[in-house]
Image (cartoon, rainbow, N blue to C red; front, side):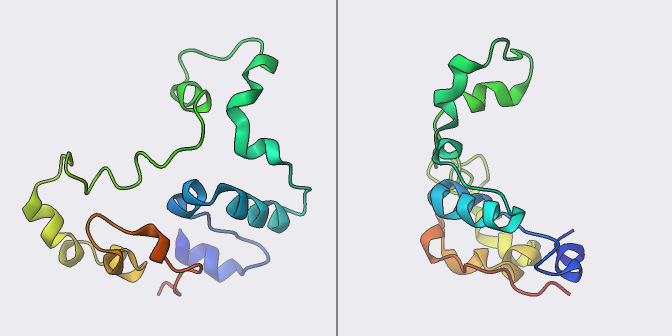
Length: 126
């Protein structure tokens, strides 16, 4: 999918990197809105404040619970943190077992990852 997006070109396809979105929501949503050609509104980074305007949020929709919360970074490194469900062996070997993580630059971020070191652009996927 990333390769197909890159083949379409930067004017037709935009990739959102989740970790960057939750760490720097204003910067990333501004970039996305600029790509879409629509005006940015700060409310997009405070979506949880809009609950009063939603008359019937669907309690069975899994994203409803997430929508009620502020944007947070609690889950970005939970997979590699002290309470990770993955074993230390898996974490140690993950870069060898999943070359896409290396290609996308995740392996250079350490364990647990320091997403502030993440590149602002994705490498070309071949």
